[in-house]
Length: 77
Image (tube, rainbow, N blue to C red; front, side, top):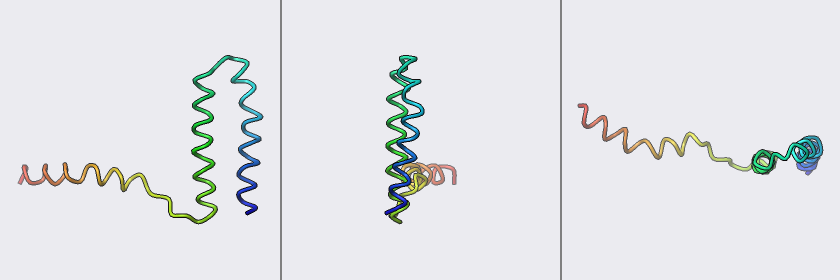
């Protein structure tokens, strides 16, 4: 519970520090990117603190490229 509160406090401090300068410089794309990455990071951090199973992106890449690799090995044999 306290780890989630700490994660949210750090995220709020980051928003309070970064957002005013992005708004002053009229950097709308950077502001959207900042919020998307921050939300993604906060969600992953909360999941990690709750000891949830977070999938590894390498497994997704393996699943995508494995059929191509097998085909290539069969062609080259």
